[in-house]
Length: 214
Ligand code: ADP
Ligand code: AMP
Image (tube, rainbow, N blue to C red; front, side, top):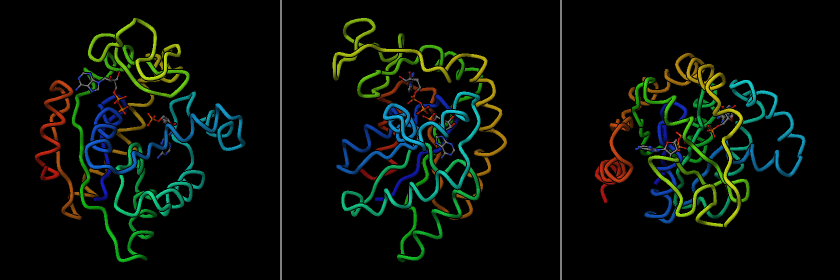
C-alpha cells in the first residue's frame, strides 16, 4: 500500500502518517524528519536544507527527489510506505510518478488532510518536537504525560524554529503556491481522498482507516 499525505504544514500529516504506519506495518517516510536528522548529524545535506527550512522555503527538488526515490527502494518499503511531506511540488510528484512507473507501480492513495489556514497558526504554535527522537506533540491537543518531556524517550521538547508565527505565514504561502496544485494532480489520477482534519486526532484516523479499507 503506497500512500501520500497531502495538506498544509501543521494539518496533521505526520500525526496520521505515524498511526497509519503502525497500523499497517509499513515505514513512515518524512522528508522533514530526514532533513532534521541530517542537520543533527551535521551532514552537508542537513546544512544545505537548513538555509531553506529556516525561512519557510522549500528545499530544492534536486536535493529532495533522489533522496526519496532511494529511500522507497529499500527492502523495508517493499510492501508499501506512507510518504509525509513529499511530494510538495509538481516536479517532485512527476519524479515520483516516473520512478514508480519504471517499476510498473503507482501511488494507491493520496490523502489530503484538510485544515483551513485559520486553524494552522494555533496548531503550529502549540506543536512541540522532541530534541531526541523527533516525536511530535501539542501542548493542548496531544500533550505529554509530563510537561516538556517526551513520552517516548524522556528528552526535552522544543518549539521548532520554523513553527514560529513569522515563518509559519511564509510556509502557508509556499504551501498554497507550490503544494496545493498536487490536489488536482492526484485527483486527475483518481487516487485523491480528502479527510476533515479539523476533527480530533482519533476521528481523523477513523476516517482514514475507512478510506484505506481497514
Ligand atoms: P504536519 O505533519 O502536517 O506538519 P503534525 O502532525 O505535526 O502536522 O501536527 C501539527 C500539530 O497539530 C502537532 O502539534 C499535533 O500534535 C497537532 N495535531 C495533529 N492533528 C491534530 C488534530 N486532529 N487536532 C488537533 N491537533 C492536532
Ligand atoms: P515538515 O517537517 O514536513 O513540515 O518539513 C519542514 C521543512 O522541510 C519544510 O518547510 C521544507 O523547508 C523542508 N521540506 C520537507 N519536505 C520537503 C519537500 N518534499 N520538498 C522541499 N522541502 C521540503
